Image (cartoon, rainbow, N blue to C red; front, side, top):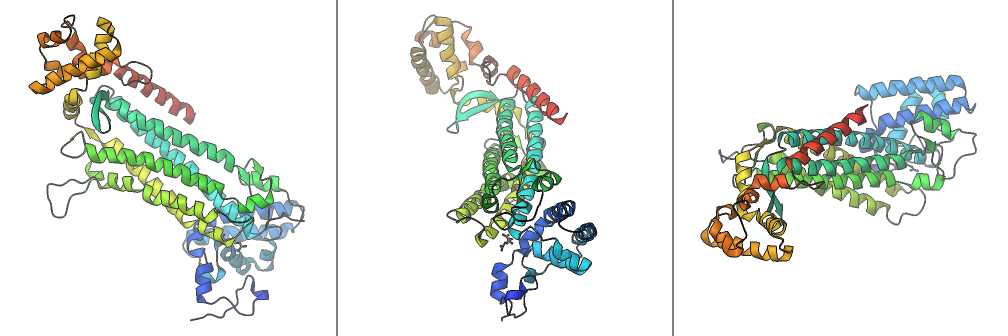
Length: 467
Ligand code: ARG
């Protein structure tokens, strides 16, 4: 069915309006209405600047600003009728403004184009998203630091290849994720610095002949400066690509934690128990307790990485400057913003609520001859063996223990002495998991004292940031 109503905004040149298919493919209002606040803030700053520069009359500025405020209230109250015929958020708002204030509305678009308008709106939206992400990451770090403090001494197996490697402390493991989240946060901050230039006033692509003041609009909108090249500005979506890159890395980190939580909460591991709030039962198997929230966090990189690849692909090979392809830049970014925010909230909640089965962790920490390296280090330190030889002797001790089906710490002294007669009773001090973690005091190591020092470091860093 074709519709033949003329588009009210660019009607002049077109005898009849787009048909239904064109309208559907062309319209972005269904998703870009999410940018209404940014669009209104941009229009307000633009109108005030036009007034201050004497490009439009002061009374028109007042009408425009009041009208925009009314529109914002209407949208917020759910009383605004969005129309596909008006294509996008920019034209929906401008058209409503004309209904509200009459001909003065027509002056708002002086020295502006939807190309710089959308570049501004989207950039403002991403700025807010980065700030929100940074705040969520800070909460996540705080939750990890609290857990780390509670478990500075809790011993668990550290893994490589998911095989028991050496005992570590659970607190140290929690702080590993705090480090990742802190890098994610610093990536947000780096990106915010690059994003800190205002596109408004670059107009369609070439700038404008009107005597606008781009520094004024930049500072009204909270930017340090205007962008320097109009062609680049209306073509640029790097800020969104950077958001998606940061989001993809962050989601990857969260998925690794989520995977560990899934593994740890199996009855076979039994290291942690998720709170009821973050688990679900099975509709058929009454005994089940499923880590659904963790699994969903683990899955989020699917859509977030997808969004990154999608936008990179849309932008690839586009000639300067604006092409309508770029309207395809938004939906998946919005989805990534929402998905990541939810995933971080869930991860933070899971960490806060997690209860640790210390006995199970400790027992598992001693499995798999996890203190073998400690024995080798003892042979080097106390008996002066070269590490390679100590490694060899320890390997023999491990096979002896394996043959008798016991742990290293259960091997009788005379058996150990058959490997090297200089070994003394003192060897048993290094074979326990507690002694093992206590000894790993090198900076960045897992010793409980190190964990406590790192907890202090994070507390201070987070507090300094708040001040
Ligand atoms: N809805 C458009 C977008 O999202 C706004 C810019 C349209 N500009 C244009 N010249 N058609 O990209």
